[in-house]
Length: 309
Image (cartoon, rainbow, N blue to C red):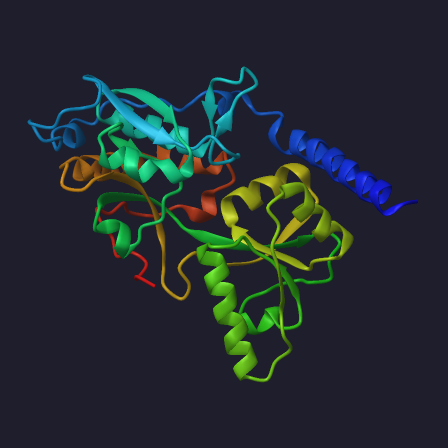
């Protein structure tokens, strides 16, 4: 077979794998509860914290930007227009608690900071990690722990990864320009100083190629956001979790609702989340998307963020 034909065959195989796995991962059999959203009553104590002079983007509505990209965080239902996932569910809890109608706005991840700063929406609920740099421009109301997961093929002999030394000698996949890449590179430097075996770092932009690398043994481990990997592991059943670390290792990291700096509604959003934590609805939302391990016990306004690099 010529090189061009070989590349074509490989490319075609990867595309087939992508669509096959992607369909399996996303077009899952959702329970009736997952197809809808948990609705709650208005929490007067939280609603009273909304400043009298705050002007919502649309009166009577909480306009929330989110990135419908991948479950369990967010995607579209089979009708290709109804947002589903943990982020829309959290947004619904917050809006209901404040006595407001929820208006979800789909945005690309890179566009949310400018859109929020310019007043296109009231809040962003899209897996945003609190950082000290972001706190200079935005206010935050935490609602989930930021965890990274290490996943291997289901038949892998790797049983657990609990410390940086455990990745010595392994082939690890990570996304470029992310917190997890920075953490992985720090681990590698630490291991090098200890005279441990080097780690082979691999980067893939295509999820299908990443999955194929793990299943074929070309890579040993994938280090990435635990939420999406946990959901895929549960639904596709081709990978397994072997360890978790804070998304801001060695510091703790939290995911939060982002609002415009000084807008004054962060305390109301924090109170809304705490009300739902207290009555159990928050736990129900995370549990049905396999995110119970990332639950917090108390929401905070502008908690300590990851330090500036």
